[in-house]
Length: 412
Ligand code: AMP
Ligand code: MG
Image (spheres, rainbow, N blue to C red):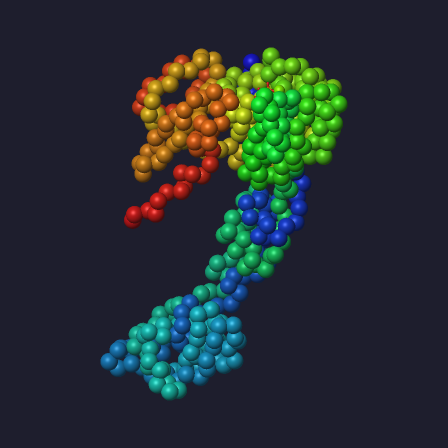
């Protein structure tokens, strides 16, 4: 038996990030950046007005007050996007809109609300300070500054930054193509009519969904029958992918054919017993130079093992630095008994009450009980050494999704 960490380390050590590709900035959302981005220009490019108002010389407003405002000549109108043509001299102003460039000679903007227009004159009611309501060229970003680094994840803010720098394309890590192969004579595909002794290959879909959720591209290979030619054909077909994930046929008691074929068409195939529950058996090796992970067939085992071993591998291929799901400490509602020597991953529902996390298991933990996975938003991780956990104790919970963020509207 090997530990979860040991298995994960061996898998991750043999995985490298894929190459880079150039994509449109909107398509880059969620992707990992493959280049350092330096600003090609100042943002904003020129000093401009932060307000609708009047651009003038601050010193001309000295001593002004609401009862006896200074009166200043308006020499120009500068809507946003236009270029000022006049220089502002003493006791002169330009009417200016937010975002419009500050005319030469002016060193402050007075807000519209603090003025009154009188034909070609403006009455200014408040003193202006030098620099007031002017957004300086380069105050957001200076030309040459590094704004995004290799390894960063593109979020909407990064998309906006790239757009404001005039960059419509960016280099990001490629998304791996992940082949999903189900094995088993008991399986039929989703739209076949199952005879009573057949089951629908739900793994083909849950695993493909997990691949999609990672941001990778699933390649559905379908079901390989427990027959030599079919297994060989399906595995060879899967070698088009960057990573192969199979389900079924790797447990100890299993009909040996899947393992035998994996050994035959694969390289360095290893068949592990991992000190975990569910998900004890796992196969790992390569077909050609494509890494292959053979998951156990039970629907929950395959999902839990995917979470622990394949998701981090896919994220590594996509250039991510943080490969693991967030784990938090939560108070468990009920007591649990477990088997000593193995790590348990227990389907559970975790909730944040505003101050701390509470977690409750979602029912039958059999490795074929998908319903308790459907109800779960996390996995309680109980360490190998433990045999019991008491009600009210703190346990580690691995979050499986972002359902904790779907809170009701905050009542500030
Ligand atoms: P195995 O690991 O091949 O011994 O499979 C264990 C159990 O998992 C089988 O008895 C099936 O009921 C179930 N199983 C295997 N493959 C699938 C699949 N693709 N979809 C759903 N259940 C599966
Ligand atoms: Mg099987």
